[in-house]
Image (cartoon, rainbow, N blue to C red; front, side, top):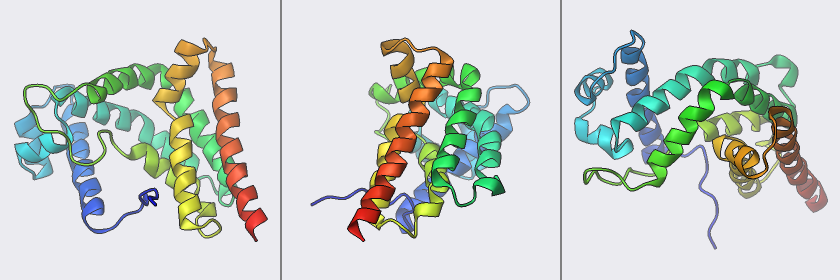
Length: 212
């Protein structure tokens, strides 16, 4: 029987996350002045090889979109998830994450549409398939932080299943489905996404309580 892979892996997985973050952070720094950095410049700033960058980002556009989205969303999301008033409220923290992401969606969703196209299509010019997930795990890290109050309550399997389920209802893909397929306006979109996420969190808690 297979289980979800823990979001907080150690060893090789943790090293991959650190390498990816170093590459993205380098791209953010180099892009801050308004110029578009080259792969060579990013590799030098991140202290990695060109080949390493292409293992994570088959196209420069994908890396630059990822860096731009991170620079836009990370500060407000981190602030929302650090609100002491929500320290023990996993559902409230997920709500805050959704509200923050949607607040910045006029700028970030166009980036998301481009990112999805780049990561769904095969790599260009014979570039190797990326190592591990094809997208930045920033969303997983945010969901993990939002659900932190439940980490010691739920079993590891239940906790990881919750993170996986929330991945389907929080983020660009959910927004695109709600806008393009359902035709919802921004407020209805937020209501639907928040309801779905809260339902998943509450279902995980109820299941745990029932098993006690």
